[in-house]
Amino acid sequence: MSLSNVTNPPGPGFVTNVAAATGVYSVGEYTFAQLLITHPDPRRAHETSESIEAGMRRLATALRLGPGNALPPVIGSRLILCRKVTALDYGHDEYVMTIPSPSQDWLRLVRDGTPCRVCLVFTPLALGADQAETDAHLRASFARDAIVWGTTYARRRM
Image (cartoon, rainbow, N blue to C red; front, side, top):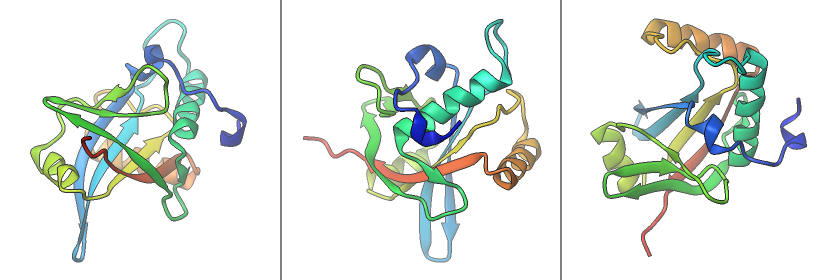
């Protein structure tokens, strides 16, 4: 399935099952906030690895993410920080994706205007995956061109 063939973002029924993890990454003098978006293995009767991948591709298209092997495109100000709620505007007309329990370091960076790299993995990741399993999954997904990414920022209050 080509990313350019899908235009509708997935609905909230799919997005509520998506996992989002925050992190901070430094390279030399540059520090980035990171947001990893994955989906667990199929858990419901109607879910398959293929349907999850299709939903993740729709989400990637809605976010306008680019290939993981190229420079990440700037996808606009999509992060919403409001009181105790942190969310990502994924392009749906009515819903946003909440980001549960972002780290305080990540929140501080994003509030200060630091760019956030969004990395989305198409293939499901086991719900209980530890750091080593997650790293192996990311490397294997990258080798299969199953990762997309982009750079976003927090929205400024009006």
